[in-house]
Length: 636
Image 1 (tube, rainbow, N blue to C red):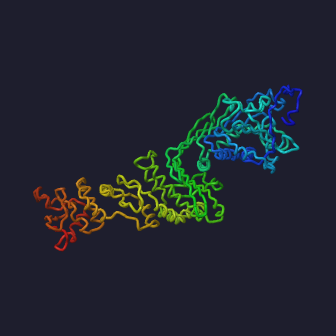
Image 2 (cartoon, rainbow, N blue to C red; image 1 turned 180 degrees about the vertical axis):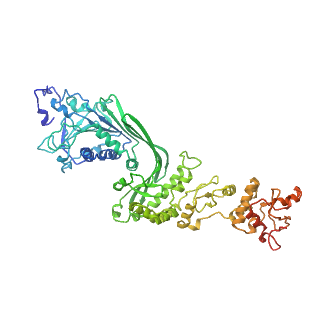
Image 3 (spheres, one colour; image 1 turned 90 degrees about the vertical axis):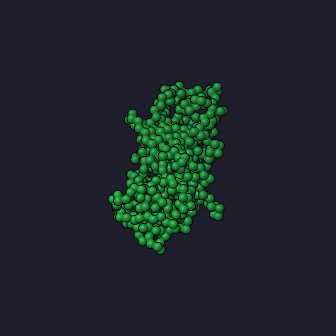
C-alpha cells in the first residue's frame, strides 16, 4: 500500500508480492476539505486539558445531518490479530478506537459532498494532530464503500494527505486483512455491503515531533461522554438541534463478542400534535449510565414544538424550535444556565419558575444580529410562535382525550403574570445582571405575547360540547374557586353557554392587552337572563345552591328586577317561591333569629322569610328596595 508497503523487517514474514496476489484496486485522490474535518478536529483536540465535549457534539450534529435516527458507539479495546501486518513493529499502532455507527447510509450525493476533489489545502494543522499509522487510519464505511483517510498528511512526507477508496463489491480486500479486520463485526451480515454509516476513529494522544505509541485510554472517552450528558444543556441541544435522533448507545468491547453498555439515551414521543405548519410533542428522555459497576437511570420530560412560517412578500422562511422542560422542573437558578450563553439556542424566562429554550433559523436573522433581542424576537414572530405553542399544548392535554397527566392549569401557568413581573422589577436589586436582563426582556415582550394569546382558541369551556373556544365566544367565570363558582358553572353549562374558568392573572393579561371588545365576563345580569330563559335548571338545584345563586345576584347587583319571576325567594320552611310584583304572596320579615319561628305553627313557616340565610343576604332582602308600594316586590 503506497510507499510504506515496500518496508520490510527481518522479524516478519511480509506478504508475498508475486503476481498471483491480486491487490485491491485503490483510487488515491487529494485530501479535500470536507465536513468530516470537524469530527477529525474534535477528536484530535479532545485530549488536551480540560477534556472537550466537541467530539460528542460533532457526532450528534453529523448524525442529524445524515438524517440518522440512532447512533451506536463502540469503545473498542486492542483486539486485532497482527500476524498479517506489513511489519511487526506496527502492532503497537493497531490500538483502541472509537467506532460510531449511524443507521443510515450515505447517498451518492453525500459522498460527493464529502469527497469532492478540492484544490484547497487541509485545514487540519500537522502540528496540532496525532499520528495515525498506515495500519490504523481513520476509516469511513457506508454501503459498499470503504474510505481510509490520513488527516496528518504524513503517509507520504513530500506530498499532501490522501484518501484511499475501496469498493467492497469488486475489490479484493483480503490482502489488507490488517486494515479491514477492525470492520469484521460490522460486515458480518454481508462482506460487500453495510446498511448504514460507520466512522472508525483510532485514539491517539497529541504528538507533534515523532510517531507516538501512547494510546489515549478508553476512560478518557468515557469521561467525555459522561461529562457531555451530565448537564441538561446537552439534552436541550439534543432535542433542539438533533431532532431526528431517537436512540444513542455506547458500548465497551474487547472482542466484539461481549459488550458492556455504559451509556444510553432513549427518546420516546408520549403524545404529539401535527398541524400544517407545526409539530408539538411531549418527549421523554431516559438516560442510563454504568459508572464503577453501578447502574443508574434518570428520566426527564420535555415539550418540543417545531414551527414554520413563510413570508410570501420577502420570500423569507423562518423555523422556530421551542423547548420547555416539564420534569424535572427547571428554574432560573439551575447551575447549567450559564453554559447556554455560547450555545446556538437561547433561553427566555417566561415565568418565575419556567424557562423556555428556543432556536430560530431564518434568512434574515443575520441582518438582525446587531438589533436589540426584543426587536429580533418580534421580527422573527416569536410571540405568535409562543401562542401557537400554547395552542398545540392545549390539544395535547385536552381533558376529554389526554393521557399526558397534565392539566389545564399548566397552560395558565405558562401565560406571563403581569403583576408577578412588576413585583420582580421592583425587587431587581436582589438579582444578578443577567437575571435583570431576562426580567426586562420578558417585560418588554409581554404585550406582544398576550396580544397573540388573545387571537387563539386557548380557553377551555367546561360546557359539554364546546371544548376550546376563542375569546369572542367565551364567557368568563371570574368567581374565585368555591361552591358558588361551581353552581354558576353548572347553571351556565346547563344553558349551553360556553363558560370558561380562568385564573386572575390570565384575565388581567387579556383585559390589558387583548381585544377588549370581545371579552365577556360573567355578571349577575347574565345569570339572571339564563335562569329566566331556562327556569327548569332551578329544579335540579339543592337549597344551598339556590341560596348561592341568589347571593351572587343580589349581593353583586342589588337590582330587584334581576330576580323577578325567579323561584329563588327562600322561606322559613326551607322551600322557595317565585319573586313577584303582581299577585304577590304575603311574606313576613321577622327578626333574623330562628327562635321567633317557635311562636308559629310549622305549617305557617311558609309565610316567613328564612331567618337562617346569610346575614348580608337577609339584610339586602329586608331593605326598602324589596319593599314598599313603589317597589316591584311586596314584603310584609
